[in-house]
Length: 230
Image (tube, rainbow, N blue to C red):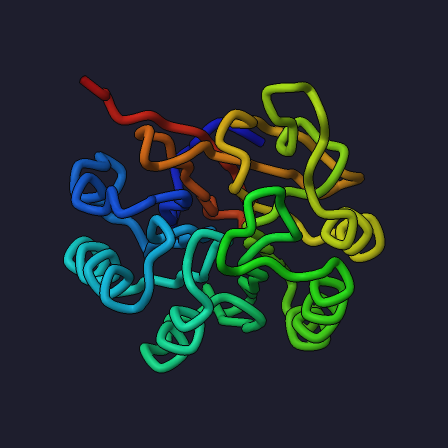
């Protein structure tokens, strides 16, 4: 499920932008893309002023953008993204007629006290609420800034797993088709929980991103990509 094939639709998935948004215009797969999906961390500890610049850069590349806060975005950005009608956090959108995309932004508590950190219990509630709407669709794509715990996508440099147990447990129970995540820059990886593919594309600030492709038969494929960085 990692090779891009002839398709009807594809989307660009990226996160951990950290204000490196001008480089989005360099993504080759933008041509013909159906939209941009952002897993979180638009800014570096920034508020609405910085987030506005990032969203403007994204919208200059594509008219359809869905995004959410990461732990490095101030909480005020969440309300602003909702006002802009692009928010993924705690929201379900129709990506295609039978495809739902829904998200949970921010992160569980970290040692660094970043602006948008929440307890595991919040993520459990938010995911359950989203699922009540998303489950009506044939295909469901979860965008979680937190990677699920215990996967190849949540390992820090020390080798410890630091992902969300709430996200892990939700995926184990409900099995969405794909979960795109971010947050842990060094864990750029594919993994799987049951039938759910887990994808951490890596940090876009380092040139990494992914594509989500839907072929003519309605099957989904994911691939990771890298911009050449000098």
